[in-house]
Length: 76
Image 1 (tube, rainbow, N blue to C red):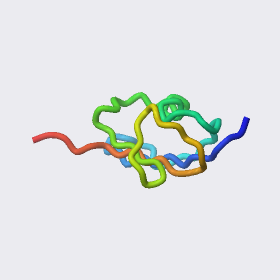
Image 2: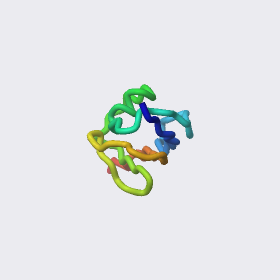
Image 3: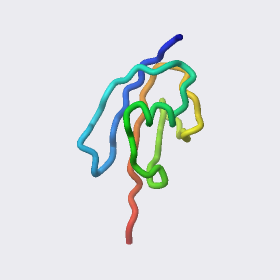
């Protein structure tokens, strides 16, 4: 199976992690990647950007790249 390299950047206020690099099977979904890195946060308040484009959990990863996880600013 062909694999792709993904750098995951955490732009999340409560995350202790800043960045990590993972290798996943080409064609995996964003949800698969989040499960692989044990990301258990609520996706409702999260923006996900892959190689400069907004992505959703069902989108597939077909090339090496960078996934940025950004927490939404909420409150009043």
